[in-house]
Length: 306
Image (tube, rainbow, N blue to C red):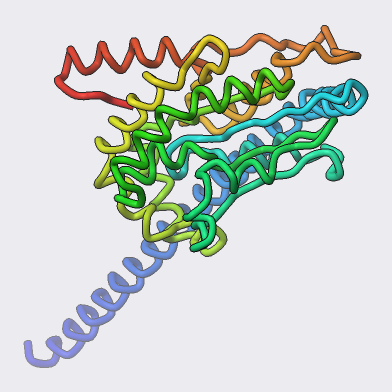
């Protein structure tokens, strides 16, 4: 009995070691399989992105035709890109301008006003960036900061806010009467999707620069932003200068349909009629319809939704 004990112990130890090694191997296999699934998912996403970017090109070619038409006819265009943080404004602007003639467009994204600018007429810092004949200016956020962002964070007084709301429709009316084509696009993203995009910015070193201190408060102040959006639409969605809402949870569809909105705003020469210029009614919503939806949601749930 005693002679057999060391053999039995040795076998038990070997079995235990083999079990440990098997567990390690299974762990490595699981990790490799997980990595393989991740790589396949990333490859699929990359293929999808390439396909989507390729499908935008015919419309981007149309934007060049539109740009040439504006230059030939000496027309001016201003496009406002508004919406919540991480709603997809910047990405859409990059797709709109990717193949355009750089001499004939300008993207304007203004920072905080200087001490001197704070003493000036509110619209003055924007007016100085307005397009000359044949040019396009794209505002990545615009004078509508005063309608939404500034009152939410207390960057303007109640008096300044109400003064702006009283002035802005007249300001835009005069702008259009002077011959400017004015497009007002509001990118609308859901709360969950915004949170997902913020989380991605936190962990992606290529996107971390996009995450600001104000962005971090966007989720907490979601309802405040929604209320200001409603008030803005209620006053500034007019027949002469309407708002167009772009549902932007799907970035590709938002970009494609935003480009279509721009193309459909001008009867430019050489339009390719074989392209589908129709806008997706699930993505492109009129400002009036958005107000109806928001008011219906307030009646149903007791508060607005975005």
